[in-house]
Length: 435
Image (cartoon, rainbow, N blue to C red):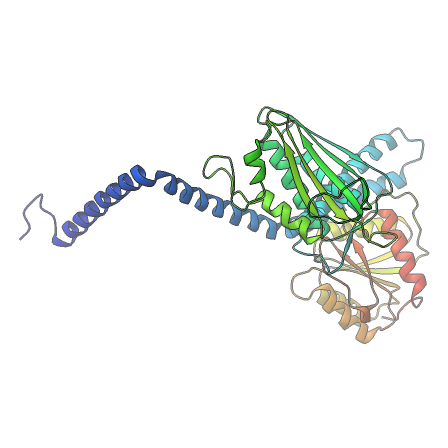
């Protein structure tokens, strides 16, 4: 019989074990704290940094899906603004505010595109990058992301040669340098990106350490922060080296910058002296081609709309608002529009054979039967039907299968780009695939 106030054996044993464990933990903590507290702090800092990096990796993986959803929303905004602007008289007092709204929406679309570029994991082997576009993209991201107390400036020379490397990884490295500058300016300041061309021919101008003679694109990132002493600057690119308190930083940002630059066969160095700020200088070998392969272009204002001639367009998208907006855009410029909310629904429309369909406009990413699978099924019945593939995100390495013969139309859609793509598809293919 258990007396009142006594503990059951199992409970008592658990309690005693917990007490012993707590005592042992405190004893070990005192021992480590007295002899090697710095080691515990470093371990805790590494753990916090690892968790933070995992979160950043998760955000990077989610970014394409977020951008896809944002591009769908912007299609509705931009498409509606384009239609209203087209239907209003040119001398309407509302044209000015509409133009301002269109410009703001296009800038938002450009931010979404840059997020995709920033989060991309890799580029094709030997890909070319436009350094002006890469730096410009990093500057825009930093202007949106850094506190207002930090001013971000850019001085970019004209007619820069392309460089060979992953534009997304380079842009991420430049963003890391901007964040590093922010950390060095807790009370605010300025970070400036200067981009020009430099040549080293083995004469009086010696190339920087790690670079040989040749033609380079030089990117200097200057900040007005507190600077680094010589010992700190010498270790700046070491992995896991940080001057911040444990847990506040992983110490991998500048190491990642160095690795990204080396991947482009370039080099990076730092000059700094307290309290005069720091200058990180990157030299990237210029590619030996006349022009760089440009990164995907964003939407542009509809300078010229190419009208339809009464042709029938079948639009397929699982987003109801995008579907309605696209229908309204095409109807406004002279097309007859049929809509379907899924791949199977589109196949059913074609199977009914209510009349000729002159163009198929279909979203790539849809639940169930995606755009590519649907288009292959359509091709079995209508091999000559012109088609356009829409997408807010199809993956950086996505290339439409050549056997489908369909152009990619990036979202967010604008009336100028959509109307031009529609005319190209219809006039370049058979004038009306029978449904």
